[in-house]
Length: 375
Image (cartoon, helix red, strand yellow):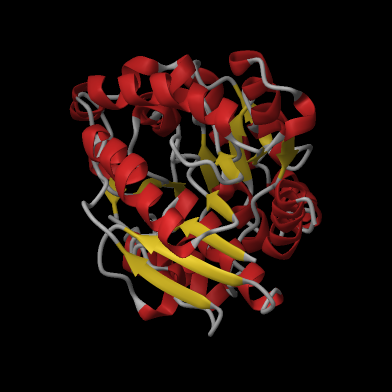
């Protein structure tokens, strides 16, 4: 079989949520199925690290698809042309975009439908594209994979899709995320937080990640914190909005907020593993990979009680109302002052993490591909 794959989010040194999903699953699937040919379709020059075996053929076609108009051109003209040229048997799209004009079977991975619930978080052109085309992609797809039961239910309700067409393919976490020893933790704090304990956030600095209320909660927490704890924020400021900037500038303890920028996996494992807790209080997530990464590192988790996060965290995290800074601050106080609670969460998180691995994810995604191919 010839399986064509949209790999435009495999960006060397810049992998984020969907990019990691693509990388970890495609690496395993291509290596486990040498009997099939895979054509990786890039929209710009690619890195050799993403060519996982001799059964992977890279194809580069333009234009670089990073704007709604270019999305349309790339998928409806360039991708359609390549699918026809290579005579692909299936098109797999890890970010959900499809070539609507193509007649071959397709698998779309929908990570979440945040744009249907919080459209104002996106620029107008992006919002219009997503809300117009993802409904069409859902109807077009031979099968849909999504990353949580929450997202499956959301797709069914938003787009009136037959539940039998949708498979849940949970994310995993990089196996390099492991607990740090005491010496590494001390060295990491010395490097990143002036030796002080810290709470940690990682993710794109996007409105739905709820930095506004995290900043407000940190200010409340610090009013009575005698340890001088810091808040480390890791991620690119691509979506840094006026509201986020305004709340940050008004913070009483903004000097205790440290922006690390994007961290590589080695530093991320150390920073995650040395934190008091991961504070991941988004108001909308389809999964939330950092939750599982923190579990693997032996780091307590504070996360939201909405959308997919209770499903992923189970009983292994403190769940808070993401719209209530006081509730978030109270969880931070509990984590910082209660060693017994921390130990319980770490133990529960370690057990919970075993249910989310990239091996399991790849096996589930391959089963979805087999259903679409009827093999």
